[in-house]
Image 1 (cartoon, rainbow over the protein chains, first blue to last red):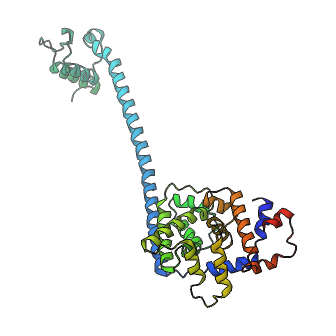
Image 2: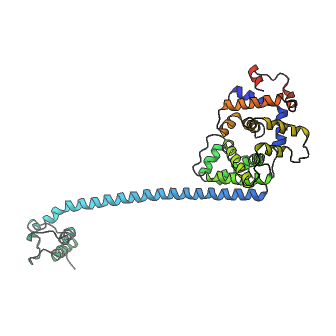
Image 3: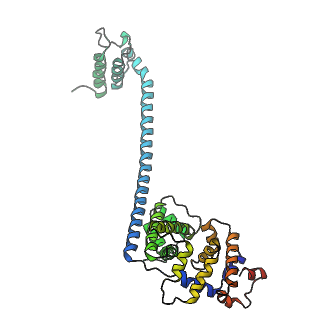
Length: 155
Length: 197
C-alpha cells in the first residue's frame, strides 16, 4: 500500500464512519446451534479431504510398490530367460557329456524336459536311455543320474 | 472458540487444503461476524442473514481441496455474501432493492435511532450504487482500498474516485455535512490528498 493511500485512509471522516457503523454495522447474534451446524459440516468436509488425501498417498505408494514389483518380476523373467539361453549349450553338450565326462545336473534334466514339452525336434543324441525316442523318460534319466552325481552315493 | 489463530488467511487456506479442520474453525471465527453483518445489510433482516452465513460457509468448504487464495478472504467472501443475499431475498419473495434494504436497516427500531440516521440513509440512497457500495465497504466493513478493488474486480483508481465522489456528495449535502466538521482543521498531507476528502 502506498504512502498516499495510507494517508487517504487515515483521513476518513471519523464522525461519518461512526454514524455509518451505528446504522449499518450492527452485530447480529448468531445462535450456538448455527455455529455448531456450520462447524460440524465444515469439519466433516475437511476430514473427508484429509481421508482422501491419505488414501491418495497410500495409492501413490501402492502404485509405486506395484510398479517396482513389476519391474523386479520383469527383470527376474529376463534373467531366467537369459539363463535358459545360456544354459542351452549345456543341454547341447549333454549328448556328448559321457564322452567329455560332463556332469549332468537337474538343470539339464529340466531343460530337456522343457524342450520335449515344447515339441522341439531333438536329435537322437538326446536319447540317453537308448529307447529310440527322445522324451520325458530321457529327462528323468538325466535327473536320476544328476541326483546320484550331486548327492553322492545313493544310500 | 479461537479467534486469534496467528496464521494469515492464505496460510489457513493452505492448511484447510491439507485437511486441517482447526484452520477451518479459525476462518469461521475470524469472519463469522463480518459475514453476518454484511449479509444483514444486503438482506435487511437477521433470519436471512443467518441463512446466508450458513450458505456462505457451505460454499466456502465446497471450494476445497484445491482452493487458491490470492488476497485476503474478505475479497472472496464479499461477492459470495452479496450474491447469496440477493438469491435469499428472491427466494423469500422480498425483492427489495439495495436502497430499500438500507432504509430498513437504518430505521429498524433501534433505541438509538434518530433523525440524523434517517437522513444519512436518505443521502446514501442518492449516491450511485457503486459509490454507496464503496463507502459501506470502506467505512462499515473495514475493507482496504486494495480489498475493495479485488472484491469488486475493479481498478483501485476506480475505488478511489468512487469514494472521493461519494464523500464529496455527503460533505456538500446539508443533511450530512456535519459529519465532516471534525476534518475542517488542517488535515495534513498535500493539497491533492485534502481534496480526496
